[in-house]
Length: 212
Image 1: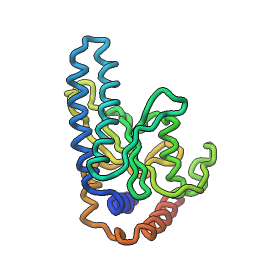
Image 2: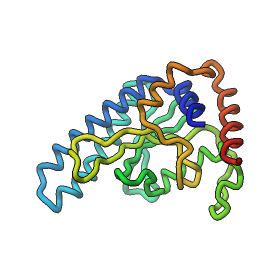
Image 3: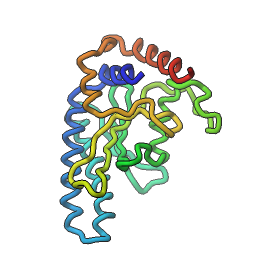
């Protein structure tokens, strides 16, 4: 059902947003590398992670504003940090980074809230050992995922940028594809004129596929 998800995202998200997001996130990686490189070890490694995090959050909000979307710096609960949210016609975008060898990030509270939007796409018995997720939400929760380079690779660029649609329990992905593949879906949109019908169709196909 990856193609259905990609087409649904393409039907509701301005193409310019994904283009700008890719460009801005890569530029943020370069900027973070330069900032971190002014430190020696062991401070370098800690500074590198912090600089990447804050620069990329800023970069994603900038991409949203450039594309005419709402991009917010939202405070975590409990307070102390901020995370970026972008809204595009019912799709809520967040941003995360994952290590080169692991594509599932830590399920922080604000990330689970975005993932919970996807409960309507899933069969009820997705995970019998998880707390049931309410199915009274609409929309789609999506993450722009930067893949950190291997520690032996150059550190000034991500190993890749992916678009991920997580399970509502944040233990895996309905879709985890390179951003270039999602961009290609803009040429084959079939339900762009009727997004409500597209969401209904998407729900049915995903439930049928993942239930069986």
